Image (cartoon, rainbow, N blue to C red; front, side, top):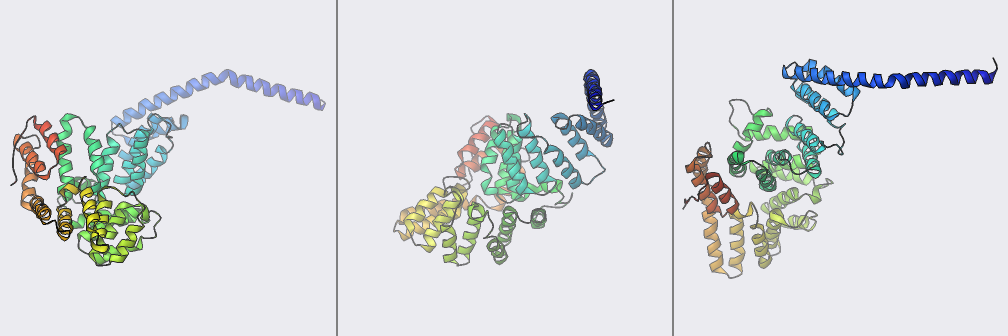
Length: 426
């Protein structure tokens, strides 16, 4: 056989093989699809029976046939997370590897990114990565409630209670009327009883024992776990420094914050900057505080900026007109209108400007708001909120928020009670 005949024979065999494959391909694809459907149904059956390991095996078959099929990946994720053969962290890391296979172009991408954020926060103790993922979810679709609610809880868990309002508002708007009383209760706890606000999540995350009362030790365990999981995170170390301030360990807090000055995100992070500036001012290091304020690269607006800028104007530059303007702008948004110290600061500058009557009125207003922070008052409110739908509770909350001048909460509680209740904390 010459070379030409050999090539022809080889080409002929290849052609025959291709024709044979073409003939059986539809049957093979049909068989694969049948196997996929069968494995999917069997996996769901096992999952319903709480036989997670068997369910996982079936969903693995599905993933081999269709590696990017969203439904099978989600079911496989559920089987892995609810199974008992791995630690929570091992299961979460494995699930994340599967969820990452679903691109942002997928119709379910927003939910997938939300699920990734939830695992990063509640199982892997990585709030910084979780926040980025949840924001990514919202960029894809901001209509569902889950990512908004998780961001609100993430801000609470990292001690950023005063910055959580946008996430609460978005959550509340997306919450059905029957659950709104519970959301209002959570919002109150978030701002006025923070230990209670995080207690349930701390228990679920293992930072609080079943019969243990929430306290400083709980917060310390949580924040240290965050730092251990993400040691290079500006967010986690700033949260820890804020906790040191709460414990009145200002030197340790400042050491932590100054160590972070060269962090690539520091100059653009309003929380880090405001916390550091306030602490430097408190410790009498005025020039350093002013230098840091001058280098502020975050947005120069909102409560954190105007409070800091006002204090710099008042204490360092002795520009009381500018200080008054900053304090008034800081009081335009939450938590500025409940921050009685802002009123005292403004009153001090007004007094130096010779505006005694205005200063006196602000001091009286500050005293009224400060009384609204008394422990006995809030102990009674927390007891009442065990029944958020009760008419007496609704009346009490309307009266409380009316005294604070918070019209949106007043209106929300009125809607809960379907009434226009009156009350007083005078």
